[in-house]
Image (cartoon, helix red, strand yellow):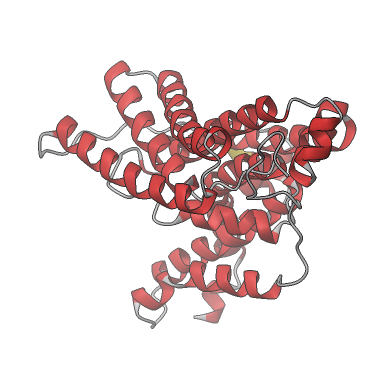
Length: 313
């Protein structure tokens, strides 16, 4: 069994699968990083991803166009995220309660809409997005095939992580967004439009989370099923915490969780003599272990989860 695992073929397939499993987590985690940098905790990321998955399937199925499906996913995710934004920003409601309520609400709505669409029958598979090979880079031993023989959404993610990191570190606007999460009252006193920036952050949160959900449909499985996110929204939240609220750290954490998921799939494929239920627990056990290991080492924005009311003391 060990001889099967320690082969170039196994490791190459494992790394490729790990990247594919990590991409939806990284999209959702990047969206959550943006919202948390502005002080809004969106536990409803599970609902945002599920909305993106459903509307990407519906949009692609009825239009026959993957770009239309992606647009529907982004719009659906943004709409769900904005519900949370209105409750958290305008109405100053508890952000944790709002997020959990959204998760439950979206699960019910997408299940209901899917049953209306299908009429009790299964739809044909959507043709998944094809993978694109990048010459030279894809020939790098072991990692080339994993990172540079992927789909267009994966390559877009690489640029987005770099872009978001540059935005927060090197631009005045990015520093203003970060200042809102640390101390919204001071930011407001300095003339930064706190509410406007928070709403923008929530729109971006929804768009990225929706694309993360769409990845499951348009790249991984080519179909929609009820509750197909299966806790990935919560794992994305854990990736943000473990990654210390920075894009590259979040990406590394997403790759860790993606590797755990890919490992349990590959171990089942080669027939490791363990119950499948035990192997399926592996990604969540590693998530818990990683979070326990980060206790006391990760500090979020000071204003995270605290409603800002202009003029209140």
